[in-house]
Image: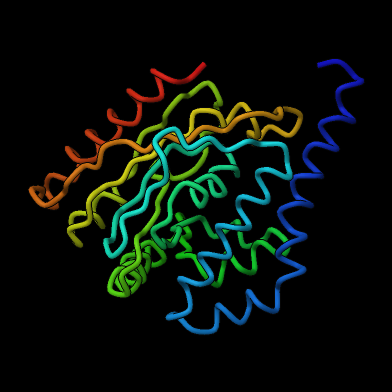
Length: 246
C-alpha cells in the first residue's frame, strides 16, 4: 500500500465509527427508555433498523436487498449468515424486519456507546466460559417465548485468515433451532469483507448486497442430527457465496 493511502483509511474508518456512535449518543435518552421493558423491545428494534440504514448510507455503503426484505410477522426464526465485518450487524438489521435479538461475543460491549446498548439488548456469550455458553440457551428460550427471532453468526467469529470464504460452523445455532422448532433463515452478505473488513488499512465505499436464501425447516431433525443440519446450512450459504462473490 502506498504511503499516501494511509490518511484516507484513517478518515474512512474514523468517519464510520463517528456515524455509528453519534446517533446513539444523541438519542440515548429514548434508547435507554426503550430498553427498560422487554415488551418495548420491538420499538427499540424499529429504531435500531433506522440507525442501521443511517450508518450504512452516511458511511458510503449502499445496501442492496437482492431478494427484498425478510418480513414474516408472527413467526420466530433462527437467522444465520456469514460473518466477515462489523457491517454484518447493520446489514442484518436493514434486511430483516422480523424483530430479533443477536447472540454475540461479549467483547463488543467494550465499544464506546454502541457497547452499552449491545449489552442491554443482545444475548452475550463468552466463548471461553462453558457456563456462559449454557446461559445463552436459557436467554434465547426467554426471547423466543416472547415471539422474537434469534440471530447467530454460526462461524462463531470472523476468521483471522481473510482468504477463507466461509469458516466452519459451530453447533449452537442448530441446537437452538432444533430444540425450539425454529426454521433456519439463511442470509448471505458477499460484499462486507471487501467494504469494511477487520484489517484497519483496507476497505472501500460502494454496494453491500444481502441475499435471503430459502428457509431450512428443522422439524424433522433430532439433536443427534444437528451436525447434518449444520452441514446443510453451511453448504447452502457457501453455494450462494461462490455464485455471487466477485
